[in-house]
Image (cartoon, one colour):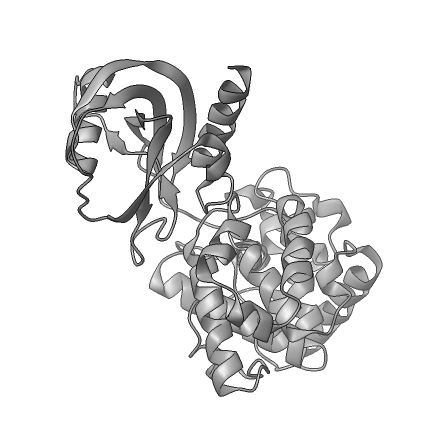
Length: 371
C-alpha cells in the first residue's frame, strides 16, 4: 500500500470503515433484481450488461434476456444471430459475442455450472479482471476486491491519490487500497457497496459528502476539493465525422450487409455506409458507398432522407441517410462485410443491428407504411 496520511492505514479504522459502509449499504442500497438472486448465471449476465450501460437501460433487458434464456445451457444452444438481435440497442456488441462463446464453454466443459474462482473465470471470453472479481465475490463469496470506475473514484478521494488513476502506478495503488479495505466476511456486499457509493453519493460532480458513510475518513473531503479526484490528464477534443448510409434499392427491396465476426459491430447488419472524406459531398459519398461496398452502380441518388447524430468512442458522427436505385450487376463484397441480403423494411426488424441502424430501420418501416 502506498504511504499515505489516510487514517485508513490504521487497522482498527479500516474495520470501522467496513462496518459503516456495510450498514449504509444494507439500509440504502437500490433494490435491483440481480441483487435478489443467488444464481451465478444471472449475476454474471448483469455484470456484463452493466458495463458502459446504465442501470435504467439494463433493468428491462436483463429480465427479458433471462426470460428467453433462463440457463447457461439454453443460452449456449441459441444461435449467435439471435443473441446479437436480443442485445440490439445495448451497444458494445463484443460483450454479447463473448457472453455467448463463454456460455458454450461453460455448458460443454463445466456441465453448465459457472466456475467459482477468479482464476477459472478469467479463462472465459469477456471475463476481464473486474468482471471475474465481481462474479467471484458476489456469486461465490471469494474474498477478492473489484476496481471499476465508481470504485476508483471512491478510493482516489478517500486517500487523495496524487497521481493519475489510469496510470500503471495509480492503478496499482488503487488495487492495493481496494484489497486492504475489503471485508473478507462479506466481499460481495462490500464490493457492491463501494460501487453503490460511487453511483449514488460519491458522484463525479457535486458528491453528497454530508451523507457519505466514509466522510470521516475521506482526505478528498478534508481537502475541500473532492471533485479534484481522481486525477486525470486532459482529454483530447472529440473527433468530428460525417457519414452516409445508403438505401440501395432494387425490385422493392434494399441492400443490407453483415459485418464479419472479429471486427467492431461484428455479426450486425447495416446499410452500405461510408465516412465522407474532407469536403466530399454526401451525394458523391452515396455513390461511393454503392461502388466500394457492393460493387454496384447507383442511380437517382436523393437525400438526405434522415439525419442522425451519435457518438462512437471518441468520435461524434453526423450520419445522413440517402436513397439510390441499384444498377445492374451482382453484389460483390469485401471486408469488413461477409454476407448480404435484399430485404423489405419489415424484414430488418428480425436482424441484429446497432442502435443507430435500428433507428434507420424504424424510419424506413414508418415511411413504407405511409405508401
